[in-house]
Image (cartoon, rainbow, N blue to C red; front, top):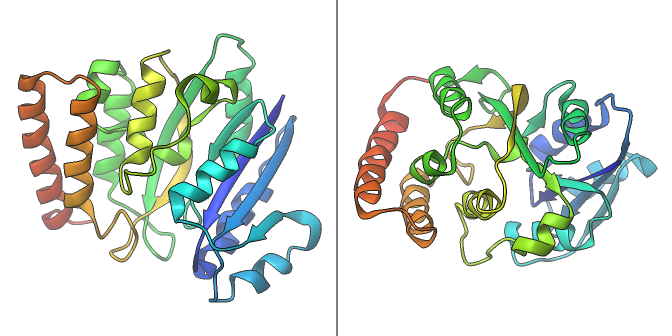
Length: 253
């Protein structure tokens, strides 16, 4: 088995080294093809990447944004199993071996696991969000996923040939494109849940997710409608998203 992991990056030198190190420090008994696709950064990212010598594959050239970079990486991936890790997030120890173990079962099409949330400095925060997602994950169904976007992107891996069935990411969705992708996967097969912390999601107010919660929720609702949520389910989802926005704004970290 071979894994391909892609990291899209643009002007994230502040975090990228930690992200790369969290991948390089993984201990696993299968081949790993790790590629950083930089969008032409000018913040010191190139020097950082050069400092790794031949330990990291990378390229740097202008792109059309995060989704474009990920799609280019997925289209050229050579691994049997693929995924992506954003340039400010982290893999936790043992994550990739647990992924490989899950795919040792030939019936496994895609997997996801638990995720912790950390702040800009790497300290764990919002444990109540992680606990909520874990509660939902342990009770996975496609219907539940339509109602709640509870799958943490950085924990998801899938068989390369699943891309042939569902296509690449939708570049018209700038915020919740990953959620839409999971719903496409879910129409084909249920995922395997890895009952362990697999990654750390970095939350800060200037990040793409941190600064766009309300817009992400609106996009989330449009995606659920596209994938067949009922009118009653849509109303319930809107209420849940309103509560989600309020919680992120007012509850303590």
